[in-house]
Length: 299
Image (cartoon, rainbow, N blue to C red; front, side, top):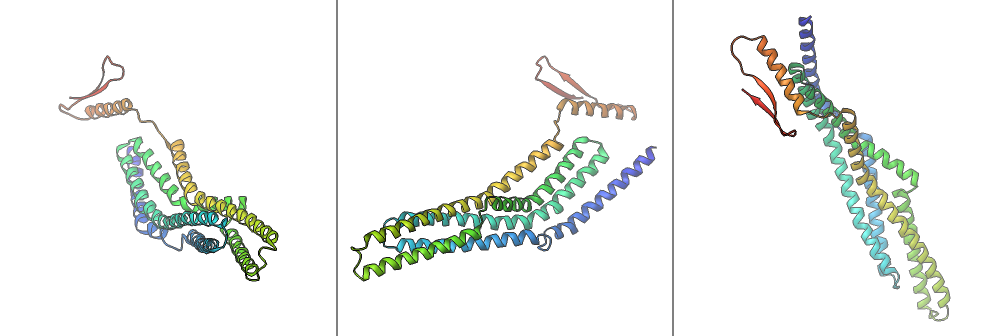
């Protein structure tokens, strides 16, 4: 029976070593290849292109507003320029996500999985349950970081579709707003050149109020879009990472009891003493009067 167990242990060790080598030299390269991450990379590239286009057109709109012959457009232009700064942050986050996608595959299958296999081999040789639990945690953590960006992109797309707030819609509305601004400028210049400004002030005022309302709605839409972009590319990935960590702790978490570990060492020492000849050391557990004080004595 003992021989059968030893053979099973040896076979398991060999399988773990093979799995570690395959993971390190084959799966790590495949997991970090653009082909496997094609959907994720395409989604990030499309989002980056749309955000950069949105940044460009908002900058052009802010310039047109700043050049408009009216006082009410200046605060709106300033707010639009601030939106451009947040859009730059979104672009940086998207680039960082692409870098993470290219690294997580290699880290998971090139480092984490082989390390888990090594810990499992040591567990089979030493019989320490803590090593087994740690190996399971490593595997779960590696898979979690590998799925982090794809899952965050999926959740972000669901939020955008649910709220009906997308970058494409923001770009379309920005183009409409810029056209309105250009027509408003042309209207005021035409009236001013013809010398009728003082006679049709009411018409100009009504047209200005109409443009102001449209700009306010457009600016509110732009702010909502930027907020969704920041949530999709910053808050959601961090939230999903913490969710994965919490799930790992909930499913595989263990409380390491120092006293139980010491008792295990004592039992192993007694077992070794019975099967050995000659004088060997001993390990005892001593508890002081202070209930919070435990001492491990090795003689």
